[in-house]
Every structure is written in C-alpha cells, then in structure tokens.
Image (cartoon, rainbow, N blue to C red; front, side, top):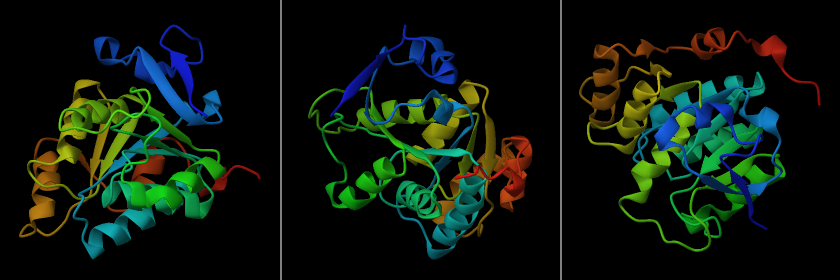
Length: 225
C-alpha cells in the first residue's frame, strides 16, 4: 500500500529538503518509513551496461559500506543500480530505490523479486509520482536529482559520457555533495565518464574504506541485530 510524505512534514528527509526548489513536494513510498534510514545515505550509481569489473567492484564496495550501516540509494534500473540494491539486501542492509515511474509500478518489472527483497529488509521504494504513471525520457533525470538529494555523497562505479550516472553526479555537485569515482580502463566506454569526473575533482575511490572514512564509520560500527 502506498503512503505519502509531504515536504512540510517533519518526517520529510532533511537533506532532500535542502535542495530547495528541486525538492519534490510529495514523496510516495512503500515500506516502513523510519527517519533513521536517511541519516547516512550514499548514492551508488553505474552504467546500465555494467562490465564484470564494474559488477565486482559495486558488490565489493556496497557489501562493506552497507554492513557498516550506511543506507544505499539508487535508481532501481538494471546494471549498476541493480547491483547496488542486490548487494545491499544480500548483506542484510537497507536500501532506498528511487523510481522513475508511478509508485504502483515495478520498473523494470522483471526485478520484482529484488523489489520485494528491498521491502523485506526494511528498505524503501519511493517516487514523486503517484499511481501507475509510466516512465518516460524526462522522468529518469528527474529521478536522479532525488537520488543525489537524499545522499551525503555519491559513488560512481562506471559511467559513459552521456549517461544517467553523470546526470546524477551533476546534481550531486550542484547540491554540494561529495563525489567519489572508481577508476577504470581508459579504453573502456563505461570508464570515460568516471575519468571525466576524476579530472574535474572527484575523489578516487579504490577501496570501501575511502567512503567509510568520509562517513566516520568502519566495519566495527556494524549495527547489532
């Protein structure tokens, strides 16, 4: 069952509210809304055409980061988003999936199992769109601003030069968020975006501890269950 949080509600995510005119007036959601899920969020994004290297790195980083208690935020698409959400639920962590469609739609629909696992692990499915609004070209970049807005930092694993991941990183920069990028092969199309980010000042991330240090966390901070 869908539920709604308005921007004027004290439970509305504080970081998201800070993006001012870009903040959605309403958030539709599924799952159990606990405010602490928003305390330490990291956006993890990557190419829809994730390579085996990108998948391995995403799983390695997210497994340790989520285990340390950080909420993983992503956009639920196949590729990088899927790898981030999947690694989180596998370790028993919490993740927020920001949808580019109406809250009553699972998109892509073949990820229904992952969708349900996110909710079972006390994660959230959120959207600024009600009902069964179908995703469109314009809804994806709008979705990306929420992914960035919810998070203290963003980790870009693989990205092409004209990718949604770079759009999310652009929003992150606009909102003053920390940007981490994983280096890849300079000949790879899905590394050209991350190389661009590094040249523009993104911090190079070569191990999960690079991100955990920014959040002042370590694996010893693993919450008791």
